[in-house]
Length: 400
Image 1 (cartoon, rainbow, N blue to C red):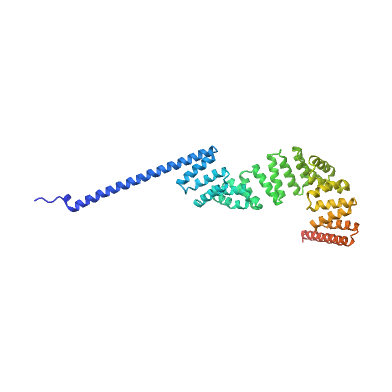
Image 2 (tube, rainbow, N blue to C red):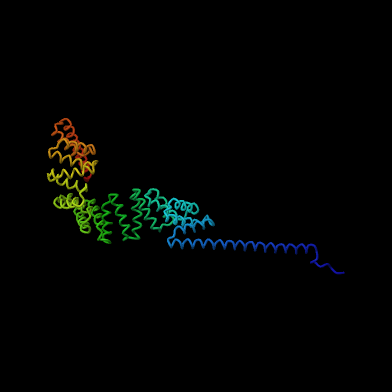
């Protein structure tokens, strides 16, 4: 009697069947996985092809075709933040600003840490003069990429445009650490200091810039403005002389030089330069006023009047032009018109004692004694207030 073989038992048959099913299932899983890998591999190839084609179009400057490629790529990979950023660049190059901004906004929503999109948005706002709006995206770009000098430079411009000059100074200082001889940065720093009235610092920066480019007439004139603002007017005159030497055709520089001569009571030289400005540019109201005031100071009212008429017509809301014209008219005996001009000057600025004094004297000559007394009294009050204020400032400076 033979024992039954174990392989022939029901349990054995069941175990064999289970092993077979497991093997089949494993084969199916492997085949599905392999198919998925093949699909992924194909998709990656297609995406890579779009990337490479788009970049080829970009290098060729064909931004329309580049945008088409980025759009096709995003149909397959809508969550690709870098592709959205690149699409924005391609659209912006076609002056499709609104669409570009929308693309960059989409990139930021997908990946808020993508500094390029923040930078691009800020740069667009700077170019459009929307300086206050540009500050935040540019700060975000720098927070993500502190070495992005382009973003820092754009931020400095945005801060200057927003009149946040001290913040701009800090950004410019950081840029100058790495690029101390960058002409663009030195120009930006100088303008920023000038707009703050920080003339001493502006002179330092402009002097450094002139060491790099001593042939720029514009730089010499800016240097002259900074020196004059620092109460260094004789040196400012030398700077403007250099500007005129480099660009003798510029009426702007020649007027600046004439004005500085006038300020220093160098009247003959001032007259020479201002006359030349008016010969080249007869409608130059600033030169007309300065030369007219010069003649008025020298007692040549008849020569000053036509020049001051021109200045007052060009600048009717300026105290100085109306006041000087009023004085010239009164000195020539045209008291009626002189009073009109002096009244207009006082209405424009009633805090200047000499305005009330000259009006009071003119009114006295015109027989308007009551009004004249009021104006002369107002002049005395303003003079007294000024003396009191000066005395107080003097006492504060005394050591105790």
